[in-house]
Image 1 (cartoon, rainbow over the protein chains, first blue to last red):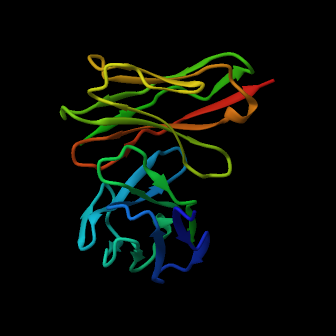
Image 2 (image 1 turned 180 degrees about the vertical axis):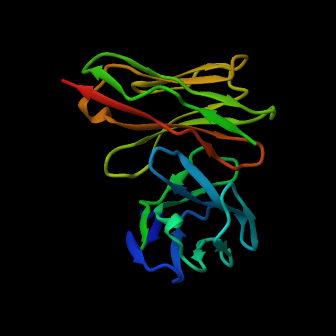
Image 3 (image 1 turned 135 degrees about the horizontal axis):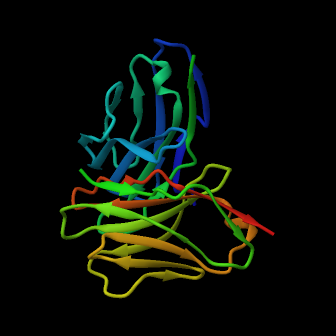
Length: 112
Length: 113
């Protein structure tokens, strides 16, 4: 009963480093999304996908890349980390036509 | 773009009393969904309730109810009989026709015994 699994839970990066935040879901959901949450803000959409091979930009896509080679996985890549990318990142998934959105536990990223 | 507005400052509510959290939204879509999520201090996002734009009845889930006023574009959450475990941030969100789920900035609720 895994649901949406994000790894790692915590990460510290140096400015300029690259890394990939992993997201996997075992519910065969078509829709997957990445959000970031900053203090005093709600969740803001970074990228989303409506199925394998299909991705699109959200509200704050700059500095992030995604790909969706399988239904299960939706990794988020930071190409060159910046302190402005310090945030909590959430991955979410949803079945097409369904109402409930399932969230991962979040990844707390600090860029120094 | 969709816009969700939650403007109430942090709220203190007495245990066992009801609390209403305000949410207004702006969209030109005819079909959309409205959600409320709870985020306790542990950080996870917990789904509470959903209302479809064409649903004629207000949604209810246990102690949670959604006061949906479509003409006013508001979707207020009512928590009845507050419990200490209700202390959390509460986020209103909207899923428009584009499926880009958009969130408000949240309301902080503290339940006091």
